[in-house]
Image (tube, rainbow over all chains, first blue to last red; front, top):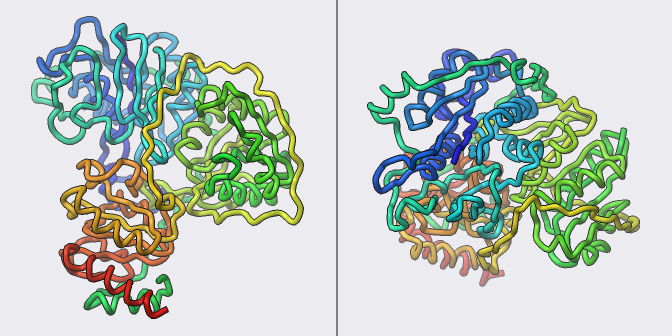
Length: 275
Length: 322
């Protein structure tokens, strides 16, 4: 099975947002692989390996794709160090692209690579747009399973049953491959991904995606990374979404610590008038 | 400038509260753009909700087909796109619910439309304000495509009021229905008599400090007393204490109730992003240095084990005097 995972580098969300000239100031920002995209890599690896033996199933391949400036090569190497086999880096500036531009590039790459599955994060934690997976599926004419909290690969590897976190519960949706799957937080739970090879009893340890091992980091240096430009994929730096300005929300006025519960209830009733 | 097509979710003959927020957004958009609002109901049995929708929109289009028994983005998106074209819609809106978020980008791609997600405010005919960076900043974006898709946030748009006279009801054919092989298997519903988290007036949330799912029963007493919805921080849902769809935060539900109780929640940015629009926030935590106290209007520094039963008793006392 060949899996393509699109990834995005994002400013580390623990940094305080700063504004300069009406936009987010990213000078000196530190960058990370978008958390949901790391989860997508983890998901893809769990589909492609025997987790109990920590060994890849022969014949599988994991390709990561990223659009971003030259510097983004660093975060792409992190994905290779986690276990991706090779990478495609489409070099462009962040202001040159939006969801539709990204989709156009991914479509061209998918036409050439012909993966069985695209697995990606449900959203990037900087723009919080949550669009690319669904748009890509539409453009490819593929089915989609968004917000995946669990995945079970069928024995013949021809379909996936995806547990999706929806309002009011968990919906199970079956999609044939090729398909686009976008992953949610709980996809990295110990038994969330079942590929029919890793024993059902196997629990993946730890919280979140795996960290690159030292061996992985060394190996990543030799793994192939192709670079290209937007034009190589028939796309132009012509975003249709223009950011006019960014503002920071006004801070909430400081609250008060109240001494005891009777005082709290009195204040909620008389002052805030919410009881 | 074209009409505004509002995709409305419904339950039987009733519109969902999310649909009423969407219709409120659609009215604002139609005012700014100079078109009219067309409400769209899609699904097997959609006809039943038509009359209610007509109370809120001057025109309602119903696409009712037995083959649409379950929502699937694959079958719904082409229908929305097709109705948008037929109705001359240049803006299509769907509330940012789980279905809206799944569907709207797919519709946008079919129409080569630029999309603004999770919109908090309409700033102009094609300009929208939306939170980014987990709500730590607001970005104002202009969408320059001839057709625009928007998912407004339910918590930012109050339910639309009824029109003085109901609008017209029409039907449209679904056309070729092709699920591209996708199938709905089942829904494991979280049954609850409580209000929906996204539009509850009061929300009671618990965090990591609740320690076990069993302990949430204590919070449920408070919720039941106030007719509140239950919520939780990511730490609590990740630990499996409570169902995943209770999660309030950047990647969970966004809520803005009149009253929000954060119990044994530290107040990570991720959680704050989901609840800081609440009118009044009460934090109960044993550690006075937790960041939750910086956004709370009222803070109680105490262990929940002691504070919650006392709070329940005190509110009961207050209610008895009214």
